[in-house]
Image (cartoon, rainbow, N blue to C red; front, side, top):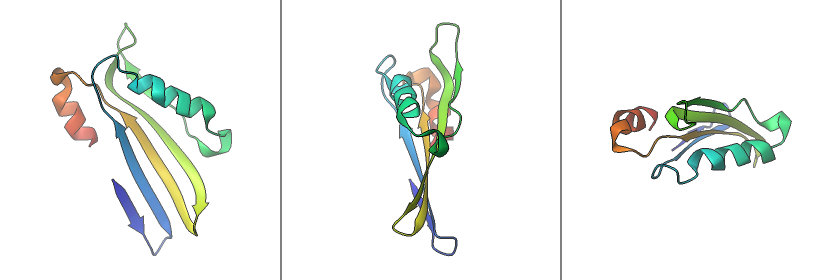
Length: 93
């Protein structure tokens, strides 16, 4: 999902990683967090179970700065793939 605010010259993008359990969604987000420059990334927030499975969602903000004259920001999420968490997915989306 993308929101463009021409008055503020901002582009806000929301990317949600979704897939089967144990398919690497959280790992993917952790790698993005490791590789992103310190000045561009926010804190990686994870709510997980005792077994390190995502319970609700993972979240990481990423600010790319100005791209083509627009301040460009990303909100990166992962959501659990199990059917049990359908309502969580709908809430994040």
